[in-house]
Length: 352
Image (cartoon, rainbow, N blue to C red; front, side, top):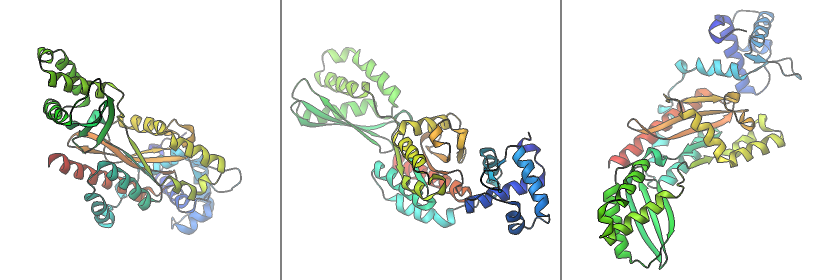
């Protein structure tokens, strides 16, 4: 069986033509279609023989009900890997819209939702965004808000503007003025630290001599430790436009679409795919095709993902999910440019 590097030039051209035709039509592609659409200067019979060779090599498959052929995951992978040099930049088409829509969104949760909605609208697929992970961001501010005599709301604000809240039960009645002092004290101690360093710092503070004679200090440290010791939702995933999947013929089967939507509901499944992707350093967009992910109910899909960053530090991931037949020439630069825009917006926010 031939590898990608062993394909002859003519075979590569035919394979790319088949993939392009299948992307636009969603129908198995025959040799006459290729001969009619592309001026390769060879007969349909020669094209048919080349397509048969590509099938034997695992790049194409022939559905039982059709004389035409469709790309396999291996065929799509070849296409995507050989596409990047010809990708057009979408900056002149969509940059104004992306920048304009996202720029004035102050609340990070709304920014995430708007981003996924925007990507789903532009791509006609599902938009995805992984919010800044607490492990990858640092503390900007901590607030304590009195709810009643026995409860306080602890609010952690990261440098990227992401807000994490938790209600903590109290063993005593504490005034809001005292909470404000505690907030200033603990913010001064923890500002600029990552989640791991915060937990380590709080352990050091708990064992410090000061905690024995400074009641305000002791309250602030113990309350903060209670907040950070509990399970923190470190990975918040936003999805938009999943209903677009119903518009694709690949998901016309009701059982298939039900299984897909159940998988979408299990966000930990999506997180496992994204986390595996993040084990590698992302340069530009990462494309995961079909069985390259291990989740059976999502093996009719492709993921186009790109990280957004603050300097060298990864904050999160933005992307598009759709059928393997998606228009990669549009989706890849769209995702890459959106990631760059988010990086720019959050960097400005962090440094302001």
